[in-house]
Amino acid sequence: MKFSQMFMPTTKETPNDATLASHQYLIRGGFITQTGSGLYNFLPLGKIVLDKIRAVVKEEMDNTGANELLMSFVTPLELWEQSGRATAMGPELLKFKDRKGAGFVLSPTNEETVVDIVKNRITSYKDLPINLYHINTKFRDEARPRFGLMRGREFLMKDAYSFHDTHEDLVREFHVMEDAYKKIYERLGLEYRVVAADSGAIGGSGSKEFMILADSGEDTIVVCPDCEYGANIEAATRAKRVVPNWQETTNSPIVQEKVLTEGMKTIEDVSNFLSTSKSQSIKAVMKKAIYEESSEIVVFFVRGNDELEETKACNAVDALELVDASEEEIKEVGLVAGYCGPFGLPENINFVVDEEIKDEVGLVCGANEEDYHFTGTDLSTLKDVKYFDLVAVQEGDKCSSCGGELQYTKGIEAGHIFQLGTKYSEAMDATFLDKNGKKQPFIMGCYGIGVSRLVAAVIEQNHDEKGAIWTKETAPFLVDIIVSNAKKEDELEAGLKIYEDLKSLGVETIIDDRKKERFGFKMSDFELIGFPYAVVVGKKLQDGLVEIIDRKTLEKEEVEVSRVSQILFEKIK
Image 1 (cartoon, rainbow, N blue to C red):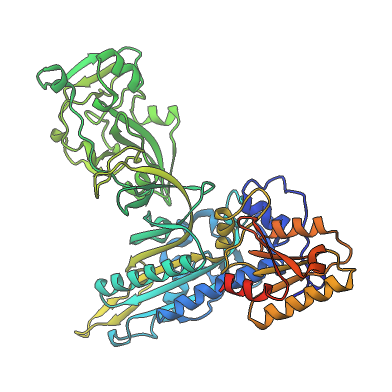
Image 2 (image 1 turned 90 degrees about the horizontal axis):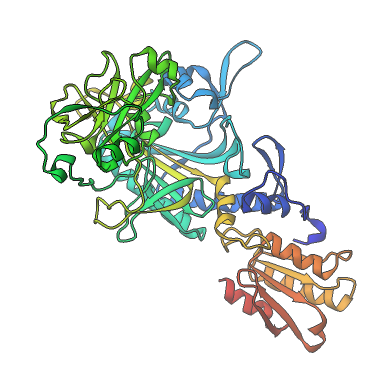
């Protein structure tokens, strides 16, 4: 390809809303243009990168024996109503009606469609397992589209769905997909981490995310430097903290007493007054839980020096979301803000206690009465208590796998795999006959990769202040031949000769043959766009020399023009 024949409108201007390097360089480098909020066009360079990543994903999926198909981007709303997600997905699910009044959605994912495809077409365990995948456009009506391709509304995704007759076979396929994903990211030249994750609106269990490590990532990942443990903060666990209770540290008898703590509504105030540590108290977090057709005030109890992890809390009460409760709402249900505890709560209040403080004794908590707290409590005396992992793991907490100190890092979610179980097959009455001739719902798995998001992820992990630095597997072209002055016939001819030689060796090459642009402008484009290598054909051509530039290191190497093609071929291959 020649620069003079290709549409690649590079620019020095950075969009005002582009805060991430990938967003800036994809726009400036002429890879994408924005057409609306969270909507992007892929220009020729961007389309080449997208297709390269897509090809790697397809090849590795095909190697697992999965079958490629293509499902409709527009899905009947009726299928989503059958699964129960028409409401559960919330406003991110874009619904519309056609001219006849029939309801449809723009698919953000395709569990319902694939179940409808398999239903009544596979009827026996003898035809299982099967894994069906496609790579197609998706749409989520994000409330705040941002970060370019990272959080757009329309995107390209590979989603696969497997069907099994046993849970054991699902787990086998789950590991097959995990291995395939690892090969994809390794081929793309990305540093990644596999982490335990929350299943969210997709549902199921055994969920894992594939995180591309980058400081700009939206997700906080908890990792252990001493072992392979990793988890999204929403699903991270830790070894149980061992905290001595107040009575043990003061040699006092463990007897529950109500003490006056006038005007003391915070953990810090009460701890200072009683000369206890925050860890020797119970924190009450009041939230309003939103369900499909109702809402309620829920109280979550955690240790005083812990923080509530809201995704865990939301899962604990099966709510669609949690929002802050107002003072009026708290008073209406009989709760006392600042003095709330698990003992003596008003009737019908839904509450959950963090599993780490189950049966703990000697902790300080609110007495559910203005200006009073309890000391010497015994949580084992509580009846009908729901315990759940509610806390956000903190840096320095101990790893439950090896005892090492956990750390935070940032990552970009680029893949997610789920063990769905029978959530969708049961809801949509999709069954098969097992070995005993009995009807059973399909046991399913779901496996997604954000293909267009990976375009941005590569840059987030590979860039400098000058522009993008593509990995060899993702670069739109591997070599950029820069003809310093294309008006000089000898330079242009030499450049074209190298260009043809590299193409004959199978090296994807572009030549900057533009006659109107100066050398400095061409170099800036090379650095901005991020081709792995450049060959500069310039003044030293008269000495039989050209210059190879490595984009990653910006190191320069003078080589004989007769040998440049072979040298580059060896570097690349």
